[in-house]
Image (cartoon, rainbow over all chains, first blue to last red; front, side, top):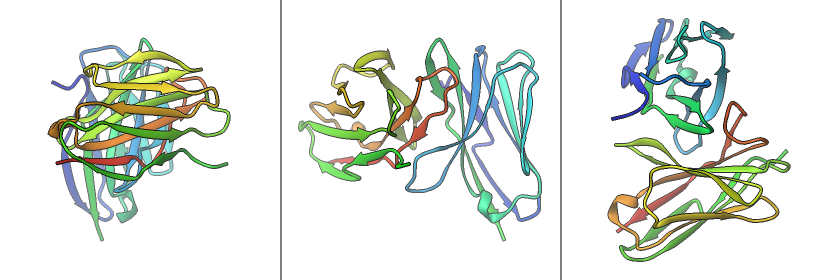
Length: 109
Length: 114
């Protein structure tokens, strides 16, 4: 069982659509990070959220950390084919980092 | 600024053999973490080294070991390879280590065990 559960596992949408992916846990984290990974490459950090209830925006991407610091969501507005990739959340606690299994997003032109 | 480099990029070994993977962090970064990525288990934390000391360890058997040198370069060793060790092995470097510091990942070493 993963410490961090990500949903959905797979998502295929058309360009221009909006989407939300979720990262849930029963554990409390000191911070939570979102990464995007493309084939043949390592994950690249998108954002770090630290405070419960925190909302961060990165162009068309909106990240939210749950009030209890146990869950997070990533919302993409008007998705583009360049958003295609594996989105991973990672929770940090006690100097230990755990990753979710990821959401594989495909945006079709 | 050069990114994190990992060598080799691809490796094929047979069961029972041992393997050593190398990671060169970004200049100035003292923390190197290692991860195993498989389709079934996702990305799993192996261990973190900071200033030549292992600071954190994931839930992997003792066949997986690592070390860090004074120049912060790190190596990971897997002994007595099993088929299930086939995976993408990623290393990541950061200035201060886990706990909110940004980690920069290398491209990974793809290990295939036959």
